[in-house]
Image (tube, rainbow, N blue to C red; front, side):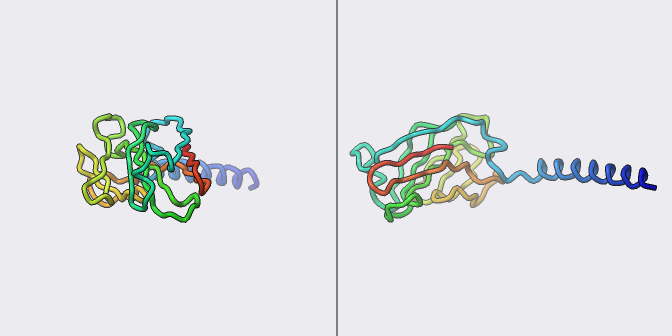
Length: 153
């Protein structure tokens, strides 16, 4: 009887693990699953004239880094780590196509994939509409509150 219980537990474990893995693949929500890994470790100086566009709330600019570039956006001016967001420009709908990069729309609040038409919010990379099903990849930002912003994954 003890042996039958062990076999039953083993069988249930295998079935559970197998079904969990297949569910995860069918319900992908993590953009890291589809976007190629590219090491990012950038230091930006927001007070430098080069970055004047991100000195004020709502300011944004494209910067080099990541897979297809990064959109740097200024959310607040509280001199804390939450002041900035760094969003990967690689579309989660066509992650392998370098021409399917997101661009900032004229409203300065929306990012749009130039090929699929999918749209995301600039301040957090959350999907708004389109055939894409995943949010955009965000990079970690650490602002010292004075002059140094670090962007990394």
